[in-house]
Length: 163
Image: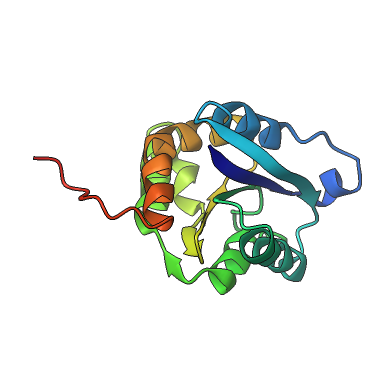
C-alpha cells in the first residue's frame, strides 16, 4: 500500500472560493494503485507554504508519494515547480518529460508546463497541472512507473532490467 498525499495549489481554492476538482481526480486515480491518502490539503500559491508542506509530508509524516496539482505554468503566482526544486534532493526528469510528451499530443500549450518530479528522502514528489483533464492525462502516463519507483525508494535491490 502506497502512503500518498495530495496538495492542491490554489489561492481561490484555499479561500473556499473554488472547488478542487483536480485533487479529486488525483484521489480517484491513485486509489487504484492501491494507495492510501494520508493527507489532502488545498493551500495558496505561496512558495514558502508549499515548501513547508512538502518538507513536512516527506520528513515528518513520511509519505511515499506527494502529488501536487496547480501552479505549474508561467503566471506570476505559478511557483509549485520552484518550491519543489528547492526541496528535492534529486530530480526524476523522465516523469515530467513523459507527461509533457503525452500532453503535446493533445495541445501545443503543454510545452510551457514547468512541472517537475523528484525525490526528497524516500518520498516521490510529482507536480501535475491544475486542470482535471490535464491531471488525468498526465497521471495516466506515469502511473505504471510509480509503484516501481516507490519500491526503489524503499530500498528494493532487485534488478530493473528486463531480459
